[in-house]
Length: 314
Image (cartoon, rainbow, N blue to C red; front, side):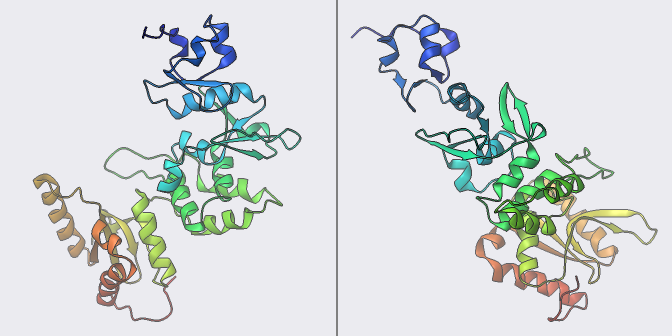
């Protein structure tokens, strides 16, 4: 069997049939065995795995006025999503309420009214803005999952060590945006998530840990909290801290095994104790074992600081 004639370079990623024909490729060649048909009027070369934007581009060409939205937009904006959503091959496209809903294989269509400020261009494609995308996620994520995604967006800090971190969107700006909306069926879920979001979180596991403690009725733990020396300057910035009971939590994600990191951790432990705080280290394994394992360790630290089970210290 003769090998298929090579395609023009511009057809190296998913493309529409009309684009292929315009590039001078015959209809017979577009039925070649080295091309997959992900949906009608589309072709995709089998040799390379396309990027998410490459998968979206021909769909956008076939659907005038379509905007990439929901979890697809969230992945483009690099938001934190549950694994089930990261692995879902479905593309989400939205059009104005007056337009037909996109109906294609591996495409979920939506009708939503968008303002010009709710649409941004990414590599030439129309994508819902960060704030609109987070709001639309409320239709498919739980409150806690929204909090984890939101914590990542609003996180910012300017510590005396390491590079500064700037928010993708400040919490106040996101809150004002959500509060400007009305009559959306999932709006209350977004508002519930906003009330639980905190600025300064460094990683999704820290958000999940804070939410676990919140739902268990524990005293509130503040992220990215500076522990002060007797002279009044910060000596340690801890992952989560309850000031009232001088208990701080450090999340160990499994990267604390090198001699250099262990030396840094030992120094941190000493400075924490000298500042008069009770440190509790929560590991990835603790989180895997579940709520009871985590609460046992945290409650032990809180009791050392004078806490007794009962009303929270929030």
